[in-house]
Length: 146
Length: 126
Image 1 (cartoon, rainbow over the protein chains, first blue to last red):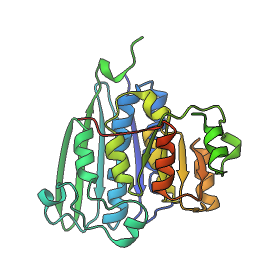
Image 2: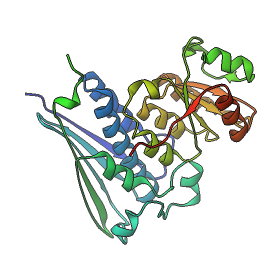
Image 3: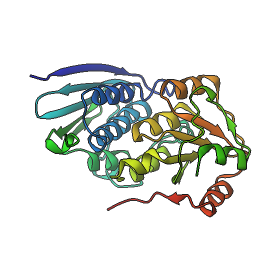
Image 4: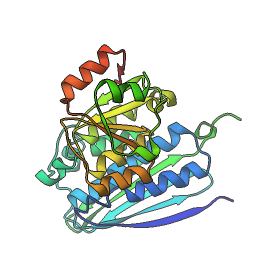
């Protein structure tokens, strides 16, 4: 049955390459004939999570796992962690620096946007790093009608 | 409104002539320098055709404008305030098949002009 796994390293403050993981995953999902809405919500969540590692962490990686009935994304970085997850989930709250803002991010909407896009989300964080796991269920609505 | 008409009427510069589509129909637009806001609002759009016929109007000349448009399936970015993208950004736009255009107008004036031309804004769907 269908099973795909991909791994992507994500470098801190590398705005030239930020988004390459999301771009790759979007192309992969397009090849698998998922519909517009399904691909868009995964792409947007992936991109926001990828950018979070770029602008907030000392570096990390992202993994895609695609199995029969779900798409699974996980993002793991090596710190410095999110001090207050509830506060970070508040729309508009941001700790992003000036460079991130100059690149169009740091609006304080990242985690909110991710949460609104996925079916299941878990986030665990301490000073050694953050683990963000996202799940998207593949249903008949994930494909266009034939 | 045809993309070619927008380019001519507002004396825009086309930075990606190889992939330019003069006949592309533009019916919707969204203005922002904050890509998270663009992602949040346009992620709520359910109708594929809205984003396919939309332009992202921004002053942000980095790769992140291109990536944002790519994630949302928006095919056209219009840079305002006379900003000129770096060659490397133009390369990413070409690779991602995103048409990149520039105008000297400010964001408010350009957005207002397009609105007067009948281009509709994209708003968040609850």
